[in-house]
Image (cartoon, rainbow, N blue to C red; front, side):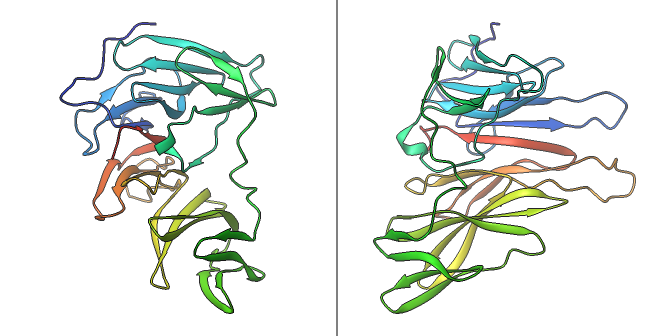
Length: 285
């Protein structure tokens, strides 16, 4: 497959996302891949046809990888427009997956995809079997940081323990089942991720920070792209139903990016649409 080059020197793509934009008539819509800048402008649709795309990930500053129909991984060079298949499953029941929470964009790691019970690192030319990254949901407590120890003080009560004092990090998981994902220190602040599962929303994640003994939520959603050594966070909202008169009862989910230092928020997907994944370029500040 060959596509026209999609990036211009004046407006390089900084965000890639997958979303389905519903039609209001009987036409069928598909989840496609889009790229844009950090202001949501200069948006280009880069996949076409009756295919479902998901789990878009950056490979360096100029290429992206994404899943097609749950069965193959394609890599697209945004400068040349060239696209190639690098991984494909053997059966229709063996779907390809990728972790929904990433927090090391600044080191520009290769994206990992899981298929056939194995892990593959995908570069710009091929997929190679590799040691899987530590599962995002298996980071075990306690975690020792330069600010203190993150641990459970009692069931469902997460704290930062500094000598003999405990700073609460929250224990509200609503009416679903939740837990702890990860914690780390960046810019002399503690950041941590929790998850929750609700029957309507599905699984979603919360990125929080502790500043002067106060916990603040920076982002929440079904998928998070985070690097707290940098400014921008990407998120995909948890799924929901529109509950509006005259609007079809389709699943909807928004997506956007946020400068967590200034609070600037840019919504990329909203309304009658269903976003499924997002990735921010390693070139983004």
